[in-house]
Image (cartoon, rainbow, N blue to C red; front, side):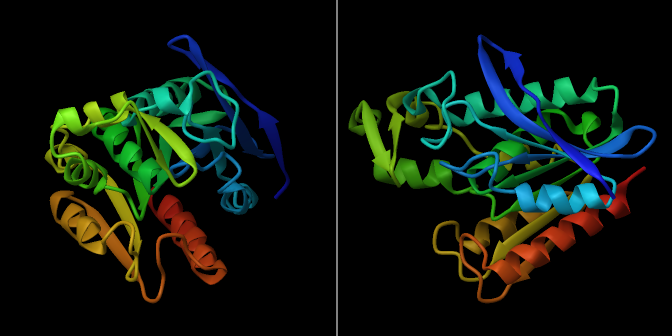
Length: 251
């Protein structure tokens, strides 16, 4: 199936979410997947998956989190980004795309990887009635635990911390001092698919196993031999599982 890729930016809260909208050439309103990239990722990271969906008649939106990467020029500095500013970006995308004339607002799905997976889970819990289902790829539900362990006291938090080539500001850590992502997962009562590598050394798979038990309707697929970031074969399998999930849950 033919499709187009167009620039689609969303202004909100004094900043601009920059993204690309993949639209299949089809009559009628289209189901949509919103892709949320990982820490220091970019909107192009899941372009291949978005193109696979488009060839099957499913629209996709891939965007850059404001301040979420050194790979994109956005309205926020990376030191101004928090999990909650990223959640606001995703919420703005949900709102804008539900009003898009070519999108079926009753069949809007969310996909998030690593930190983007955590942010997807956060947004989904607040917008359960506006999404048909969510797919979480090795969601980083460990982030708050990790940083509380590194900075046990608020006074321990520096003004800036560099992690994996990107600087984070003090507000990132202060905002998650008492944050428990597991407390809100059960609020999402629609379909969930969790995908996680058994050899993930960044986000232990135990976090996803725990999450699966808290969601009322969640399936989990564990990928033998895969870590935090899949091989080409793992990526291909992930995309096919995503496609099947969306097709099965379209209402």
